[in-house]
Length: 237
Image 1 (cartoon, one colour):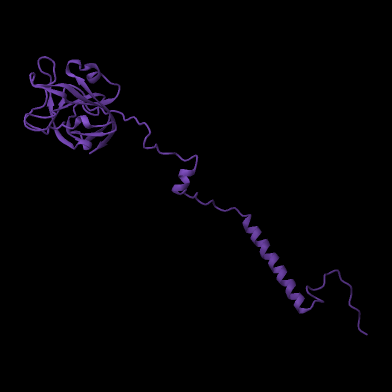
Image 2 (cartoon, rainbow, N blue to C red; image 1 turned 90 degrees about the vertical axis):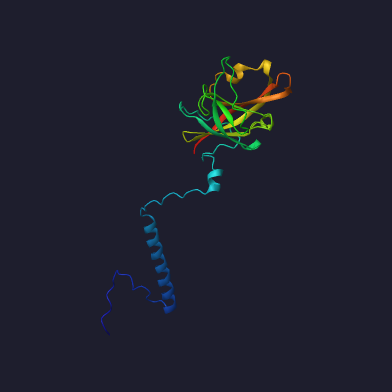
């Protein structure tokens, strides 16, 4: 007989004593374990951070921390501009179809505002001794309601309603937009000078024309229509 095989502490060769089928199953299991350990090792390595994803429009609106734009009905304050040497060029009031140029008017010897010339039915007058439209204070604009022969530029002024818009283009490239607050009628012998012409804390507008009944004996109307408006926007044109 040959020499016996000496004992050893080494484990028997992997898969010894196993059938080929069982040996294949064992190798497959070990391979899966090694792949799993490799993936775990890679997941623990630091990675460069990804850039944050930009929220969609729907997410921005739904997010409580997202800034909300003011609603259309939110109260806004438009600061007045200060350009003392600017002059108004043209007025536009879409609601009553007004689109007219300006002329400058002043006071007569009695301190009464002169109206614009009556021979031009599509002309408004700006009181040049007062406020430039868009600057701080009440800008005064006059217009005839009619002439001896035809309706004039401010024929429809009494039909304006609150929230109507008035645009005044200036020669400094700025267009001032005013929003109508009220339309009121005052008897000429009870005209509220302080309210119409008095100082204001912001930029405002007064549109003035004749109103009431026509007094043939005096050759004049018995009242005035006054539109009160405030500055609501400024834009370059």
